[in-house]
Amino acid sequence: MVTEPPASSERMMTPDVVVTGEAVALEVRAASAGMRILSGLVDYTLYTGGLVMTLNTWLAIAPADITLSGPMAMVELSLILLLWTLVLPLTIEVLSRGLSAGRLITGTRVVRDDGGAIRLRHSLVRTLLALIEIWATAGTLASLTCAATPRGKRLGDLLAGTYVVHVRSVTRGAPPVLMPPELAAWASQADIRALPGSLALVARTFLQRASTMQPAPRTRLAVQLAAAVEPHVAPPAPAGTHPERFLAAVLAERRDREFILELRSRRADQKE
Image (cartoon, rainbow, N blue to C red; front, side, top):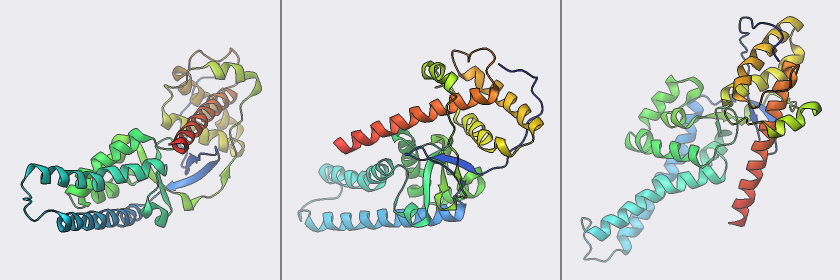
């Protein structure tokens, strides 16, 4: 498929591309550390307030002879702490697809590194790490890592493969990647699960910017990206496939599969 040798990489400094649940591509920028800290202050102030109110209510209605060191009291206290520090934050983030009260106010959302919607496993990792970097350290550790890491990630984001984007910074709607008709049958049977999200994001950004590039750099970069993507796709594309059309087929199929999974997830949520 690759018709000319790869050349030196063309560095593309572009905004990230996020695909919404409706398969609409939007260019967004990572939220700043200050915006993330503000969002976290709103969220964890609400959670802390709810926790304090619940504890006060529990103590007010508890029998007079109950001792806080007793086994039953410890179980009830643990359940209350678990509810406000883990269960509620996790449930809100999963059901809202990366939103929260603080993120609604700041216009931000949690997404995967490749721009897709987060799922339960991503939120679970983030919420578990929040017990250490937010609750245990009063947010100090999370604030420091947000300020020091690319894309303003905290430890939970680094382990979960997520980051927070500022969705109000949309610059323009990116045109959708279209499936080349001659590759539709091949793409529908191809195994593309091994394709890294970061590589898919670079390839998608290239295709959406290709029309603005000079012919020679465009050809070189198309060949390079196709050669990088090809080992992650099986079976190989038909012989003689143009590199850009190969990339378009892989990314369009990947997007369509993500969209189908998103629809199934939403239908399952509605049934519940």
